[in-house]
Amino acid sequence: MKVAVITHHWKESDGGGIRTYVVNVVNKLRGKGVDVRVLFRDGVDPQEFKARKGMVAFTLDCYRQLRKVRPEVIHSHNTWHCLLPGLIYKRLNGARLVHTLHTEPEQEFSYPTRLFYQYLLNSCDWVIVSSKGLEEKVIEVHDLSFPRSATIFGGAGAGSVTPEEERQFRQRFQLDGAYPIILVQAFTEFGLKAQGLKVTIESLKLLLEKYPRAILLATRGGRYTEELRRFAEQEGVGDHVVFTGDVSNPFVPLSVCDVFVFPWLGKSGLGMALLEAMVWEKPVIATDVGHGSEVVRDGENGLLVAPDPRGIAEKVDLLIQDRALAQELGRNAKRTIEEGFTWEKTAERYLRCFSSNEDI
View 1 (cartoon, one colour):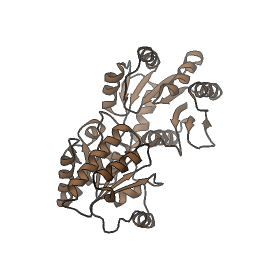
View 2: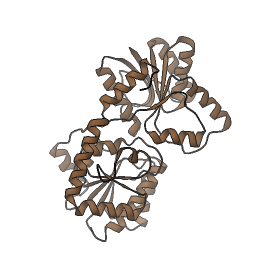
View 3: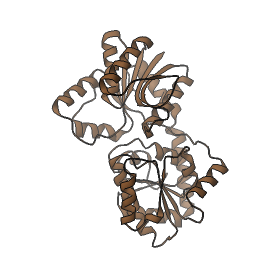
View 4: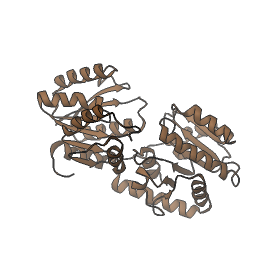
């Protein structure tokens, strides 16, 4: 089987969870003997095809490349710019077309745009969503329907961290003596995530009354970093919030943290960082909306909480005071990922929708 993947975000791009999802699915498919060709806009990979930026240029470049590749299946990701060249190729040359939606819409489409996007989706053999709440949000905001859809969660790998990597990270960000270390991973790029991080910063203000050495780690350099930095200063906790920027190994912050917080405020979201924290056996606290509540079972493999500063602070305090509970939640969290959220399972489900219209 020959599959062409069309994506904005590929290796060494700022795609965050989307990049992680696409790269891991491609790697697993190739491991199963599938001939996968990648057409991308952002990133670096001399082995794959990089299209020009701009909607028209990207569409034309990808269509021309599809004609050279001649795939049996086209798998596009997230935006209609990635879906359109696949649709054109399907109409003119014939191929199965699968489109995966990843991100939650923040504003309504105009009427013409909605009609156009609905036409694109109607032309797909499958529309895949990366979380159950995402389909509901797309229907709510864009008023779109999905002729044939399924949810395919991403997976998580444990990664690896050397003692030297951890030592250097602690030294660079002056973490020796800090306790507890609370981690929010990659919440500085998008608006809803930034708002969730602000709620966590407010919870830190409450925690400092009891834990004066507490530190909140916020990873990734995003467009909201400076706004969040100013917010932390205004709340009087600037010295206790560490903005790490982009880190080369995202598992290093996981290795040093005591509690992982996933303060998502939307109804959907990839939650790659959440899954990775769970496979690392970290005690996780997730807001009871969106992807977190689809994965975390309250009191069994993590804790769910309303997106409220006091609620988050109370849950962090509980995990610090009851380390036996924290360890049990961590073990159960890892088991949850190993049983149902592996990239192997993700790739297997995609293989079924690449070849069949039967329920997957």
